[in-house]
Image (cartoon, rainbow, N blue to C red):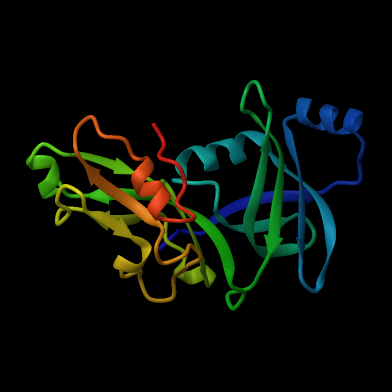
Length: 204
C-alpha cells in the first residue's frame, strides 16, 4: 500500500499571477485544499520539498499529511499538479481534504509481470494501459499494479475482467478493456482496438 507523506504548509493570502510568481521565486509552491464539508483554503508548500516528494513517488497520486502552520495536520490526497508547459516544473498543487473513510479515485502505474509464452514463440507483447484508474479507500491505495502476462499466447489479450485486483480496489474501466495483447511480429494493432471499445491507443 502507498505510504503517507508528510508535507509542511502555510496559509497564504496572496492571489493574482504577479503575486503567485513572486511566491514561486521565494521558493514556495502555491496550493489549494478543498473537499466536501470544508471551505477552499489557499496554501503554500515548500517547492523543493514538494518536488523531492514527487521524484520519489511512482505517480502523482499521493496521500499526504499536510501539516498546516497554526491549523494542525490534515489528511489530503494530491488531486492534481499543474506543470510549466516548457520546463515541467510544478506551478500549482491541488489537494483534496479526505478522511480514512472517504473513497478516492486514482491513476495507478501498471506494469507487466513475466514473459508471455507467445513472446517466446516469436510474438510481440504490447501494453495498452500504462495507468489504471481505480477507486478505493485511502488505506487501500496501492503504489503500483502488476499484471501477470506469462500465460498469454500469440493472439491472446489480457482484459480488465481477467485480473483479480487486491481487496478494496475497484477499477473504473469497462471489463472488456485490453491491458496487454500478444500479436504477430509486424502485424498491426488496429484489430484489437477496434474489437474492444474504450481501449486506449497503445503507447510507444
